[in-house]
Length: 111
Length: 117
Image 1: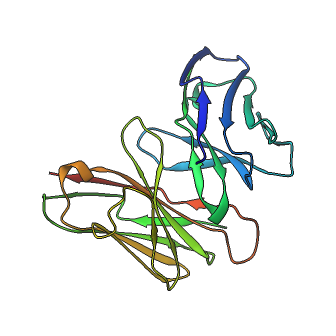
Image 2 (image 1 turned 30 degrees about the vertical axis):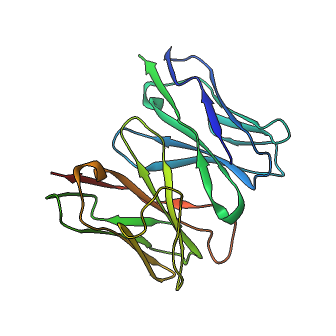
């Protein structure tokens, strides 16, 4: 059974800092890995999707990497802003297009 | 493109009543739709997977007679919570995908907040 772990569970940083969120998964037989953002009481916003054959994806200040063989992914956020405050979820897709989510990292960026 | 809607966005009901939640893919056809539940401060847990025209596949521990799923078309799936109780209060999120043509990405609805009194 796939298990996804995210570290840290919570993170508080001052504005402008670069930061890294970590995600690990136990079964490397995945089709893709996706990072989402969730604001309180809201649905999911897809940030980046990395196919299993890819190593990284970039969008603006966000960069996600994938090391499938070691079961790890990182989400790098450059020059963090208060508007980046949210919960970040990592999810891996296995057979049957089923997504398994991590518990999330709650990020607070202080002005 | 790839927009998924849910209706209603929130609902409050009395214990013992049934509640229906709709999930629609607005601008694409999806081979599969998924239903998730999220309790406060927790992550999303997959409840069931449904394919158009066939019975849903439920995850272990999810009561199929309590959470009825109907997937009538490639753009519409419904989740009915029957005889709802306070412990069913949660945030229900659907996703659709992959598209019948394109990548294997899933697209998520905005969620439905269910409160059972």
